[in-house]
Length: 162
Image (cartoon, rainbow, N blue to C red; front, side):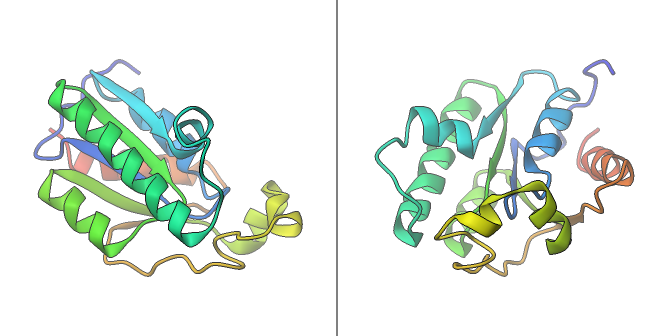
């Protein structure tokens, strides 16, 4: 697919949801649709920027603030950032809206998440088990684990693009 889609009013996208929900798939697929786009994946930011953070609620809040900052740098450089993280907050959603970043939650049935991610059985401070995922007023895309999710994703992205 050639990069032809141009954003209408959004300057970037941010996918959030539980581990295994499809954020990385969505990010890489959407990145292929937009010119001047790149992915800012929360796991990659944690590996290279946020090595000092653990997985407490406070550290997760710091992590999403850092992702937001990287996204802002991208926007200032005429890039289209596609960000992803497990955590999200009301305050950050408001900042994203004010800066033209569309925040989208990706949901997937928990039974499927447990099958694709071992962390739900072996880790601590897991969002969705030990820590709640914030219930926020953002658009939601349902990932049923089939190719149908790709169609839902592309249709939604096209609806916010020209």
